[in-house]
Every structure is written in structure tokens, then in C-alpha cells.
Image 1 (cartoon, one colour):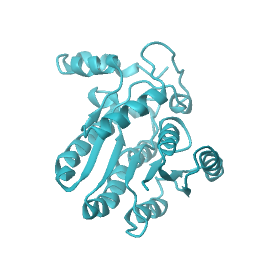
Image 2 (cartoon, one colour):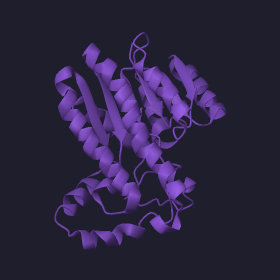
Image 3 (cartoon, helix red, strand yellow):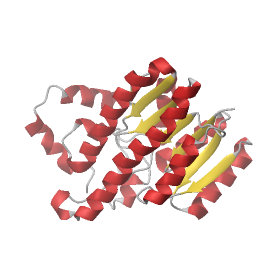
Length: 250
């Protein structure tokens, strides 16, 4: 039986991972801040898919709470086969319009938690000779779009390195780079969510990412439009790419 641990599992991409992984028969460990909502999601998945679902309420900006998730991943007696580092949020304002504390909290979730949870998971996985990590990054990682992009660029580099470093030990690591996706992410940022061809459905995004993961790819970039955008970033100067700074902020 496979066990998957998902952070940010009550909404958006994380919730869709929970649904699709439960549908294929995985037992789950769900991590999010809202304990009541975690229980609701867990009960829905138990009823719908007859899998075991453990809930682990945790605010990943709190080191004590983060340590509890690390300990769960490091538990050799209850192995986790797949870690999905999905938790995250963005800030609507530009760098100097945000407080340093807000910027630091975002960095704690987008970078520090990914590093620490991956570190906790990789040891047991490498010992067993199998396992995997999917780090939810962003197409923004390829664009100069402030600290969110910088954090996601770190996730990409870390994931690619870990992919190369640990694949010989049976561990797969992949970065998923979504573009605009129809989730609560933008609503929480208090910006308008679109509905055009640039906006992907979460079920398509997750399904494609799991297919890419099974193929052992270092990156998953669902959507031909986003593959084209990333290809263009290699040819367009950064000063021109900076014009994308306002996209997704209105």
C-alpha cells in the first residue's frame, strides 16, 4: 500500500492531488492549517475511496508545527512513499509595498518548508530504495517577477538537483510548474481569477503531473501554452520579461 503526504491539501492543487491519489488507492496524510477543513476533506475521501486518511494540522511557518510534519515523514515504521510539497501563497503587492515579515513568511512556506520536508523524506526513501517527491513550483520561476518567482526558481533548482542526485537510489524528484490555474490561490491574494485559454483546470494539471512523474521527468509543465512561454523566456531579454510583473496582480 502506498502512502502519500500532501501539504496544502484542503484546497486547489493540493486538494486535487488528494482526490486523484486517493482514487488510485493511496492512503493519505493531509497537512494544512485549518483542522476542521482537514477533517471534512479526510472524511469525504474516506467515504469516496475507502482509503486511510490521516490528518496533520500544521502552520508551516511555525517551526514546531513544521517539525511535527518532518517527524511524520522521517518515521521509518510508517513510511511515506510520496511527498507532495504543495503548500504556498503569493503576495499581491510589490516587494516594498509588503512588510519584511510578510515576505519572510512567504519564503518560509515556499522555500524553508520544502527544504526541511524534503530533507526529512529523502533519508528514509533513499534507505528503502524507493519513493518520490513532487515540489509544486510555478511558471513564474522562469520570469523575473519578484520574490515569489525567486522562491520558485529555488524550488526548480533544488528539485532538478535532487532528481539527479537521488534517482540512482530509487527516489524520483520532480518540479511541477503550473501556469494560471483555477483554484483559490488568486482569491486568497484578492486578485481577479481569469477564465480564458491561459487558465488551466486543476484536475488536468494534476493528472498530467502524475503522468510525468511516473515517467521519471525532472519537470512537469502542463499546457502547450506554458511550454511555449518557457521556451520563449530563453530567447527574450530580462528587461522585456519584466513587463510581466503586473500579470496576475489585478
